[in-house]
Amino acid sequence: MNTRILVLHGPNLNLLGTREPEIYGATTLAQLDAMLVAYGEELGAEVRSLQSNHEGALIDALHAARIDRTAGVVLNAGGYTHTSVALRDAVVACGLPVIEVHLSNVAAREPFRHVSLIAAVAAGSISGLGTDSYRLGLQAALRLAHDR
Ligand code: DQA
Image: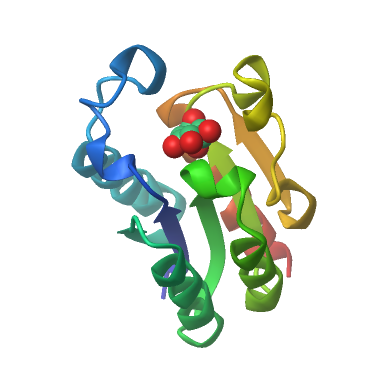
């Protein structure tokens, strides 16, 4: 049975490909998810992905991951990265290795994006590499899942 990894996309990431493509790239969310499923198969991972614009739905997904045999999480919390104590608490509560990812280099953008409430409770963070941030995040989540 392949190791299950949850890829969680936060608010506005449903618009990938058309939203500020100069920052977030031309790849759509469907293309990104398909690419991650294929890459996961190569690595021996079963990738499940979920996007929501709602903080509570993202929190519910992390709670579900505690009990449904998910072994690691790749999380792009979008704008909630910089604001959500509740999402941060859910990252801790899920008890799984969570890799924080961002398409853009948040450190090189507006000051409010320099603060991540997720970073300190994530196993690691990858930012600025476009869709490669997710690919590397998947690799890292899988490695940590196997090491547990
Ligand atoms: C993002 C960066 C966030 O600051 C922003 O709010 C997003 C996307 C990224 O992937 O680069 O929605 O998480």
